[in-house]
Image (tube, rainbow, N blue to C red; front, side, top):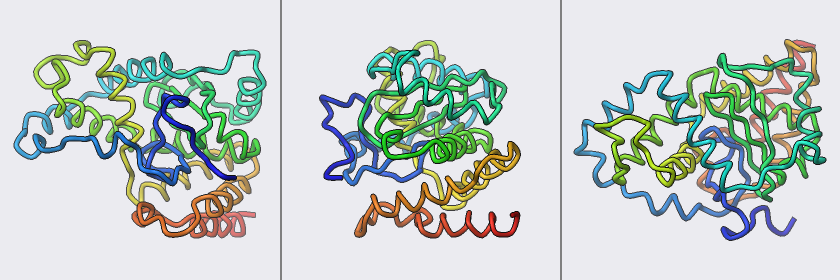
Length: 266
């Protein structure tokens, strides 16, 4: 595989510098242009931003997820309901028996972009990229979605949305501090969605989300081997020399952790 990302003009959702981090699976070896563009200078002296972000209610986080997911949908081509990607995703997720998670109706769709990528938000929004589906089998797709749902169920995604909100407010989003979520512009909401995807999780959070995915698959008596082969594929694709991944568990370690659980549980 010569490349695992396409250019910005072909790919409205920007490639991200993380691996199963920040609520998203991505295998880009390149840093996002957005990451370098964030101006955090005003954050240190802006206690009001931190307070506002930290006190966002569950309802406000879901509202932000509704609006930012919709903004991302408007700028990315979505696989039609009858398309091969949409049918395959629906078939792959059906055995999870999960019409809802986090109390919200599951809304799973495929973005027709070439990045190997997926994310989930607190409102039930799940987006899987065609590039991921092209290299993953159905067991691995279920494992990825289970991982992303795990971040939501464990509260990690809420914290990522709070962080994204703070970053967006720091860039001068109208009403982000003193107003309400409803005052954010469409442009702000699109940027907010990008920042949500860019947020990163800790090693322990990543491992916990892996275990959540394992638990979801185990409960439904589905193959958990996809969690192992998923990380084996990631290990090959990420290659060596990517220090940006050093803060996260290595893919071989994650594969071994899951294999150990399978060996123990049978």
